Image 1 (tube, helix red, strand yellow):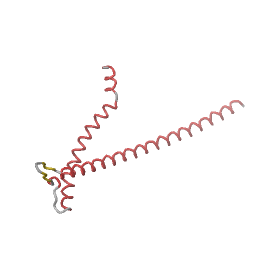
Image 2 (cartoon, rainbow, N blue to C red):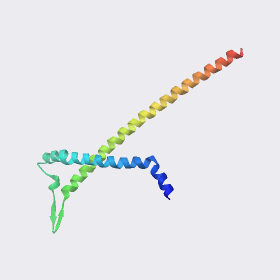
Image 3 (cartoon, rainbow, N blue to C red):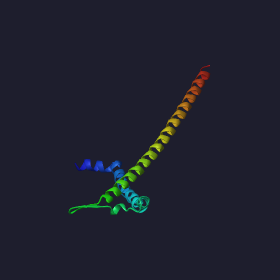
Image 4 (cartoon, rainbow, N blue to C red):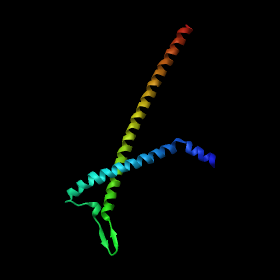
Length: 128
């Protein structure tokens, strides 16, 4: 079991996942600041000075903070949109790299074909 664990840990995927989690946490802090400090005050101003974080309702002894919920939903949507844009960007880069590989393969194939023709011509000339 220890041997399997060492193999699992030594794989690059685990390290990549750990880096992704750490970067994701830092990214979340940046996006939360964007939402809390920039977007929500602007949205509140547009809606007539409403501060979402202060919106609440009291039902009996329960204090329901629906403004904080709205804030978190907006935060989630912005993070999801940013991740979408990042994934789309990475996919586009991947497509570009894939096309370059295909072009390179075609060039190599063409060069190889030309070299084979030259080889065959040399064989014919040598045979004469």
